Image (cartoon, rainbow, N blue to C red; front, top):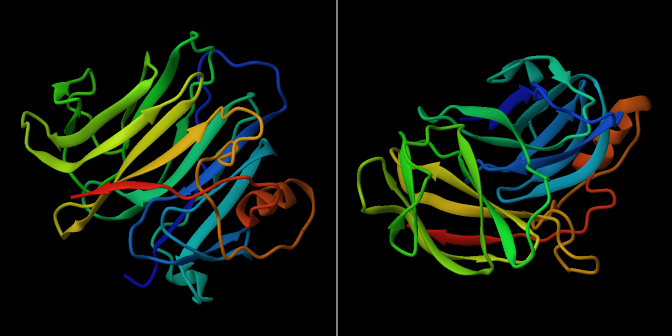
Length: 264
């Protein structure tokens, strides 16, 4: 597939939102094996964006943004797999926008609203997101079936658990045979650890793995707010709200690192 993905940010604000004028946006590259370039409103903003890379956060005002993600070096945007223009809400949200494969293996873009509510002392938040080309899955922690059962592609869930290191794996719904993992997932005090199941279990099971993003790292942590890093970025400003998205995609102000924890 010459084009890794092409999509736009289409986000629905929840029923309860604060009065902030902007939302904090992350972009996650969850399509294994495809290095891409990223365009916004026809301008190339990120070059050689690699799998496992994450850009952000940046504050982005509400507005319509056309985000095109194509194979690295591709300049013909008419070859895009998906071309949509939708709206980013100004609702004081934290949002991770993930380029990944849907259940049929087609590149798509899915926005997830990050739960930034208070976490009790001695606990961390575990978020699980199904972004792999696979049917519904169950999630296991320390070999025990969790409340994450029958999660469809594009689905997710959150749970607060005591600080510690857990062995996690993903299995087809109704099975206890690992399809992705097992892998150790560290839950830290007050930190939201987001686990993305990615890859193509049907066409190429070797690509099945977990990516991890962390939000809420203590000040001074090497992982900063993202837990992953955007590399090969290029800069440039085209003004207005699009300039903020450029800063996001180009990695301006990002303090982050890359993490891959397991593959089958």
